[in-house]
Image (tube, rainbow, N blue to C red; front, side):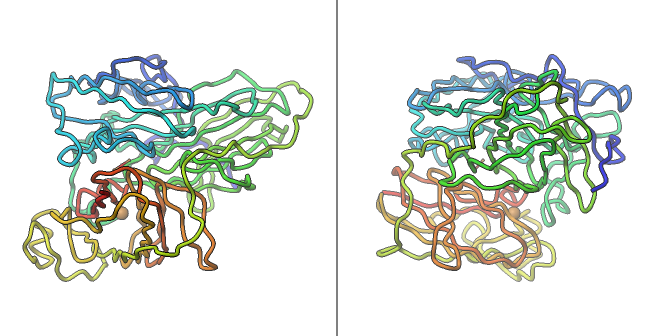
Length: 457
Ligand code: C2O
Ligand code: CU
């Protein structure tokens, strides 16, 4: 694998931490506001600061860190020029706290506040982001990470959050305001030209045999990001916040938008003498971040699974209700017509309305849910991606498990990356009552029609 350092605007580059791009500690008030950050590493040239929208004016927003069983209490203060709301991605919570304007709360107007409060039942790596005009607001930087520590967290030398993002920047390093460009919406979404990894902690060096926990979060609006970690031996221990029953060997990892993974690695001296986070595109690897390895310490005991969360897992599918989901539309998709706001529209009219993707012939949300079920009901959703693009299918409110072809269940996930023309099935146990969204987390696709909802009573 050839390893290169990228040049900004040739395509992407590594990012230097600057004082304003922070993972500042938990604060009780999160102000959604504008800010200026030095996004681009000095070695790539003398670029001006980038104007962003961020929580507390930084990207990512403050790292919110709790212990399992704690209650999250955060006040959102909106100092942006547009209304906003915070969605707590992947966290099991009461419906009223889910942060979806028009469904679970009203968008918070400029100058107003909203109080979020809920218990954190499950440990793991989660994130928060705007769920209002999210193709613009998330692309401008309105996201942050929530870490809920296990009561017996594994002993590690460093526990580092790795935020993967993809910015679309102009020649003078400003976020371009081409949100909602129809070509993006009908294709792979608003892809950027500056992919980077930002670390919550950058040790000067680590000894050989240091154990690192790396928590990857893909916050990009639309881009699937593939990375590997060089300079250590490790295991995948959690996906989308939920512990794997058996830690798995790690290879290159592909993250759809919103997907997370926790890995544990024990550092091992290599040619570069560094732990390296490498971005893969085709056959080329690009260095995103590195931590030098210097000195040595005794090896640790073998990696063990994380303690299980109380989130229930599926045991069997007897009495399950099956609701198929047919995903259609987009460029080269063959969608001819779909229902939008109660009307049947042909493709031309759909394009005029910016609604070019559909679930079961419905573009955007309908008055009626995909399915209405009592709490505790097991729901199976066989999904058929009848489009020419990948989609990151996300369910609010509870995690699901994939039903694998041999009938066994995959790990608990809240987002599943589906490749073009692929069919995959998920199943879940209906959780708290309320209205729960299900959508593609390529935010351009969600805005352009790939949304539905599930009602739990
Ligand atoms: Cu990250 Cu509708 O969510
Ligand atoms: Cu999609």
